[in-house]
Length: 244
Image (cartoon, rainbow, N blue to C red; front, side):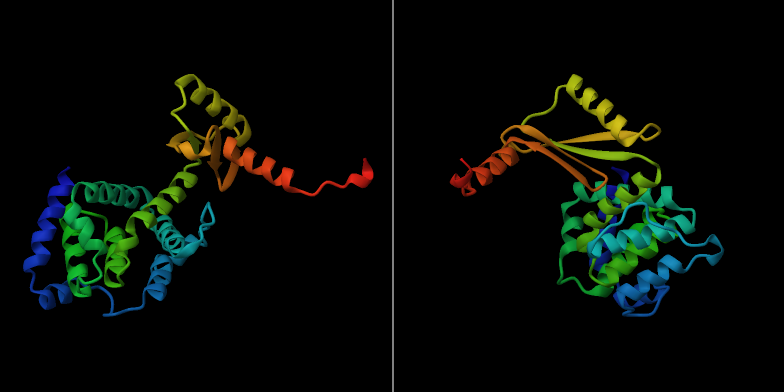
């Protein structure tokens, strides 16, 4: 909750800021720098002696690319845990500050105002310099609106980095503790020992029954909805009476 207060302070800041003076002192990179080259440079800016860093999970899409570049930079700078902590704190605080959340998604806010505000929030929250630089790049290029998705994908990479496996289980009602434990034990056998399994439950009445299990980009669909769809396709197939 402390960060939420700092964010509220940041809101007051960007409402009254003298943009030109604040931005000129806050920037550490050229004005209007294209985002994609900047992020690529950001991911490779640390010492080359660390060698190549590979992401543990291949992500797709623009947000996946941003998360991957941030992960590479974080690993090279040995700041993975700190950046993960900073971003988790920011996302949680945004949930308690609708004004700030709306500010990050409002395309009418001038680029300079977005940048100056996010720099001020980072400074007040004592975020790590890599976190501040990354958020500043997003702010300058109007990508803060995708922050929650980028952070979610980044967390997917940090989880995989630790060897943890997050499993999403979709059912029509919450699994009883005994069934959840049984599912964990079964998945442990499939995934292998030495990996921590975290089960996240999702309720979706539209699957009618059964369950859908998603982990490591795999989907095990055992829902009644899917079985019914398969049966419907089977019944619609023409019957060859010549073989009867």
